[in-house]
Length: 194
Ligand code: GDP
Image 1 (spheres, protein in one colour):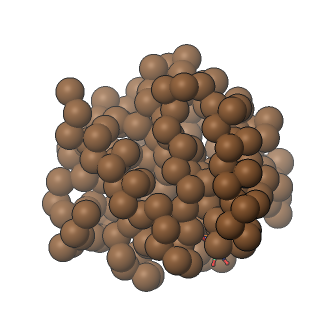
Image 2 (cartoon, helix red, strand yellow; image 1 turned 90 degrees about the horizontal axis):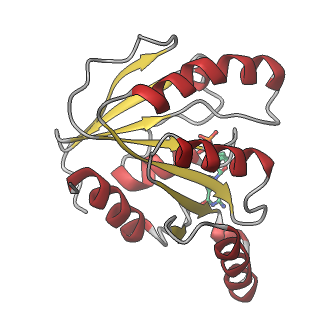
């Protein structure tokens, strides 16, 4: 996918703070520090578009990015094991659940997991929630570059076995760019689909 334009549109910190529904949206979920920002930057080939978790203020909001004037990527706040995770979790639920449940233009959700950790309780919960509210989901197993080839294959096979058949799985590395085209195929399939 050739990205000609990509820009930050706005952030929503409270339910109802989202921009008016416009182009199709694909949301990116995952625990803090898993590599959501790196995925967005790799997809858009813009190194600084999504700030890393260190950026104050940005990590507890929904961040909306517009790509090629026709698709929005929505960076969801991270969850789990971050500093102040209790507070983060409490803030996460209403903001993110409302968005995932009610957003009319949301076409699918990429759940980013660390290829070395796979799917844990929080991820299972989120996938079940998405299935319950009828949202398509896919799992992006990132930081694949941190595993040797054989270990990467084994990790992906193990992950595949834990996912429902209708949930695509893509191995990915922001460092090497591996999996970028496959992630775009999933995203565009949702965005341009029926
Ligand atoms: P976020 O909190 O989910 O947005 O996570 P970030 O995108 O900020 O990434 C967290 C850390 O993991 C940063 O130090 C990134 O450089 C690193 N990281 C993210 N993706 C990859 C990857 O594919 N490979 C490697 N080796 N490091 C990554």
